[in-house]
Image: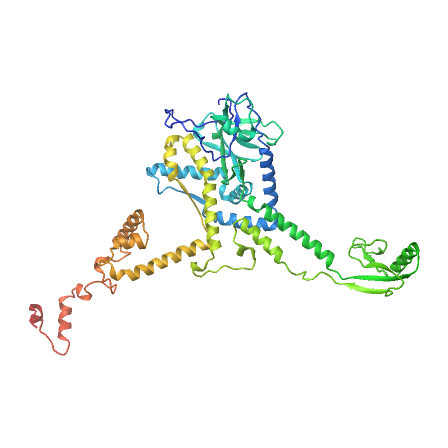
Length: 543
């Protein structure tokens, strides 16, 4: 692997910890298995795989230009990527990571460096849209070979049509000739992994043994949709190919039908008597030229010209009629009926939106969403929100790969430590979906109503800890943090001490007598009233 371009992150050498298996390890990167051998290996064209992938990517990109499809894609990307001037679209979440605060601070700093390298604050929408349309996203991670501890110095986008991951496997000696359809089963376990890059594109029928690149030098993120039969990564637009083609055809046919059937045309039956065929045709032409009105306005020159020698599909019909018929007759051919109906077009538009997992209600431009109770939100919006959440988690693999490279190159953690820590590192996207806010408010409101109902029974049938954990759904960390905050606010005087407040009235216990008045004031108070008490008796309590 020393001949590979780029760099590799080395692991500590360990003994074999996994026993043998009769199945190969599942690969989630849609790598192409090839038989090893030679400097450049063998051709990677497996039953036109590359040709199919390139054609699919071109088709996805052409689909994104269609107005309805572009609008649906815009809805998805806008829901996934949100943010304003002050906040970044995504942040790293380390609350579940059990490391020191210093390591957490370094991880957050390196994550901000990753966002800076991607210019994510400005290009977040474009990056996510490109990944959503193509289904794959590649970045070349550049480092300083003289000083690798500087980390990644630059990220460069790579066209997915020009790069492909390859898994090189040893040829089984029992097989003389490899069958492309069952190649992976005829090869023994993998021996090397790398990316193949060809600036001219990786197409079927051409030698695809381009530049070999080390896998750690490439950041790769795909859609998660994969055709297991052809080992091809698909975009989320793949399901909408048929629906979009049907919508295009129905729109084109609708235009043709309306143009051809919109005008009312006339049928002229001309009586030609017993004239021979040639004479009858000549007579019919003379009648047509006499009564036809084919004046055409030229918008370029402003002239009006006579265009009678041409007959279009929208003009009248002239038919001869022999003697013995009803003579010359003019009838009217009605135009197309129900030309204003668009139910078929609306059906295929909704079908396109359903294929893209976008709620059909968003198709109507004048439709407004309800800002009332969360229970009134449609089920389609709930499903759409879950779909966007899945897209965010899949797209986060790009941050995961780049953050791993940064931390390992700078020596903050090792690869082995990353394997233990990676599952506890999450990424928090800013959400501006109205459903999320309404849902949280509604849930909190219902929980507080339940707490109000259960409060008189606290200490009898329910404990306070039970109410906080089961009703309010507060975790151990939240309970600890909330208690700490309340103690600080009580000490600072922002909140009254619960021990000195009547829980029923909310007033201090003991009322006014808690603060004993001065002695001279008590004399004046006790001396006024219907029955005065002497100060001496008042002091002794004999009154």
